[in-house]
Length: 376
Ligand SMILES: *Cc1c(COP(=O)(O)O)cnc(C)c1O
Image (cartoon, rainbow, N blue to C red; front, side, top):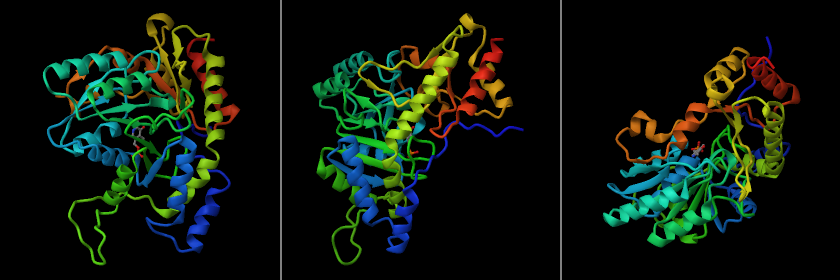
């Protein structure tokens, strides 16, 4: 039996172990230490952020961001519906209610005109949301500028979930650096990984120092342990920050490799009827963190599930694109501004194996099996 081909696996470079070793040799085996500071600095430089806090996960980063812009129980927070649940869970941790906004076809991310319409409507009834969480999905930036302008018009803080978009560009800048705060993830399946981890970035140094304070149990500056607030245990370990520093050194190569996977799939499958690849919006570069495409059975006679199951038989792992949050049972009672795009993508969309460590033989195995379904 052939080796399984997985969706997206960690891809460690040459330097990571050296940084980890250094942490051991200097006994910085703690959620404090020189790798954390260096990782924050190097990361900020790469994405063009002013300030950064290294945290235990992207979810933790988003939780702190929402808390620090003042989200409280009973508030509403707007969020992209086409995303992974970690974009939304922190809204509920704070006792707030998500309102979901659908996507446009050009970027698969939040549709600026839907956002504008729904904010105008909320304004008329005097119930504006406390924040907007804008997700940059599958390595592609949303159309940030119009969304920022709309948020600014109403004075609503924009928080960018760039967990999947490290290495992407929007008008030659990094998504995640435009809003009041942005978050990134270094989970095992992301474009670079620390096994688990996240980063909060902001132009506001007070927000970042508050985040670091809350992430370390909100300990007041006293020789003993003094607390006037409830905090969290959300700091990244110095060892994992060492892995992160090594991974940052190969980020560019990882983006190139993932874009190469996508180009290969496009070349080998692009002629098949009913297949469409995720578009790349003209305002930036998509990292192709995951290679996504849609199968229209009315045109090609083959649906997404047939492809997924056929590949599964061959031990090739694929995944339907994210099931929209407004279709999730846990959010059944939440409002959604729905234009049908996310639902349509979920019906037809599939993520193919996308790791930066895939070989040509593996990529060919995937495309050959898909072509067999079409007898081509
Ligand atoms: C992975 C991911 C997160 C959460 O990051 P973790 O580090 O796994 O907590 C948040 N949002 C999106 C869109 C993600 O893909």
